[in-house]
Length: 167
Image 1 (cartoon, rainbow, N blue to C red):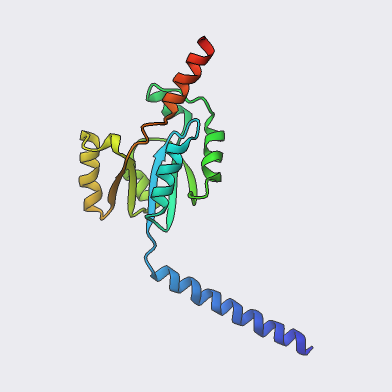
Image 2 (cartoon, rainbow, N blue to C red):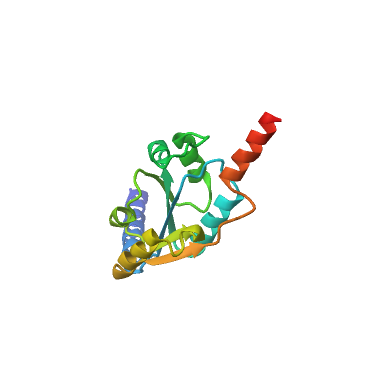
């Protein structure tokens, strides 16, 4: 019987410790980052943006563009959404991969409560992102632009594969 009481006390102490631990970390502001992409033919450029983003936040949420949105943007992915999101989930820099079903970044902010949004520098100073920056600034969200990896892209890989098939 004594062991049962000791085990019970030990479990109670562990439970209380975990509760205090959780409360302590809730009070520390975690930096949540967010980025999106198609992530078709996952390559080093994708790894670079995810690694760099993760280095600047505690939790990284990645929106993976669904096939319907890719088609809406007059593009078509080679790899299906289901496979692309699993590849992104497998990346060690990603804490959570979610479907990106529209381009509304403010709706994503409401849903995921991020502090920083990471974007490729190909969007820098575009009208769309100037507007987003203003809206994000009003909500205390930083916009960080990362350099586009020029040596590798899904488009370049697709073009190379097409040339190889055609020759």
